[in-house]
Image (cartoon, rainbow, N blue to C red; front, top):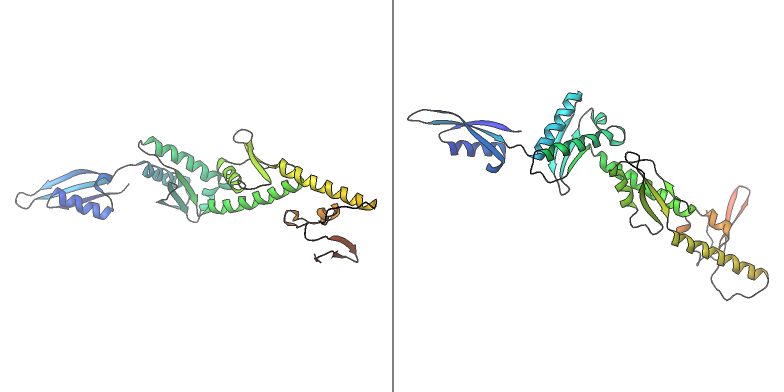
Amino acid sequence: MKSIEVTASSYDEALRSALEQLGLEENEVDTAIVKESGLIKKKVTVKVTQKLTGQLAALEFIEGAIERMGFNCEVEMSKSEEGYLYNISGPDVAHIIGYRGDVLDSLQYLALLIANSTGGFDGRIIVDGENYREKRVQVLTKLARRLAFKAAKSGEAISLEPMNPFERRVIHSALAGDNYVTTHSEGDEPSRYVVIAPNKKRGEGRQGGRRDGDRRRSDRNRGERTTSAAPTVSKSNIEYHTDIDMYDASSSVNFKKKGFGKTKSYGNNKRFF
């Protein structure tokens, strides 16, 4: 907490000077008269101390914990729309982050308890280390999309490794608008994990489309006339394309032919791989 002693000719003048130096408002400080002297030319010494709020109590706790652990780091507090952010930086910040942010999560949880214990605090505490959390969000978002594609293609659910609540929320948010998969959490803390499951309705529709294509091909083999003008795609070709979700089967008929170490493509529209 910030504290300062100011001497002036009156209490009001000393208080005004102290508030200007601290950059605070009068309702954010506690004051006490330290000394009064002089009969003709009066002097008043006033001690002005910043009030202990929840966010300041959390800051003191984080700084004290880092100091007691013996790490060389600094903590900067700032306010955002999400709450109060405590960004830790310095040569030893990697130790404060820990394995996948486990130390940061512990500090954040304890700091929130300290802030709430002061009374009157109603906000969110976020403890970060040199923008680690944003980088982690980017990594988890890429992982979620890659595994979602894999689950949709294979038709089998994929269980991720246990994650903390923050990381699970990132996975759920990253796939919230995905039409091919759904997500849910299973297990108990601290072993709770996310499951990425394929959308059954989507999968049934895709399988039905392939069965219809096989039926049309068998009709042609028997010499029977088919009324469908849309080209079909062989099963081997479907398996060949890893990006089948983006493959336009209605505009191109392609199949692969292996020979001499090369793969060629033929059809209405030629494509090379």
